[in-house]
Length: 164
Image (cartoon, rainbow, N blue to C red; front, top):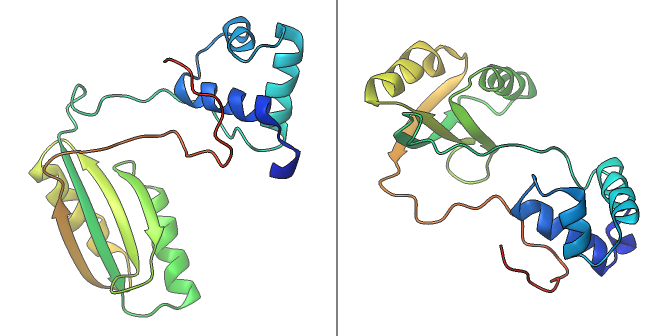
């Protein structure tokens, strides 16, 4: 379903589910002023249409010992399709890489890496990252403090806000 087919109720459902994916269908239906059956049908349509790609649980990295967050800029020797593909395939296999973006500007890729300590970061860089063929330069910046982190996307149609 294209975004033009979404109405205010669909946007409201998406907004509520971004805030709490564990919301029961009954509670969600109540929050968006539908009965449970039509609400569930709309959620299924949003899933089928690709608006809802998956449901996850977000963990607190500090509570599980992942105290070091690093942004790594990677520059390749060449931006050839083969090198880009090899780099991306290697990065997909690394669980400490939380995000990876192909970039414009000075570097080719920006990675966000989360590890328990500096030794683990060194191991990742020395044992894995530098072993990927075609890397010309690696620059790291440590995050000192997370000022803002959100997973909820800004929705194009502002639904009536609710209390979370």
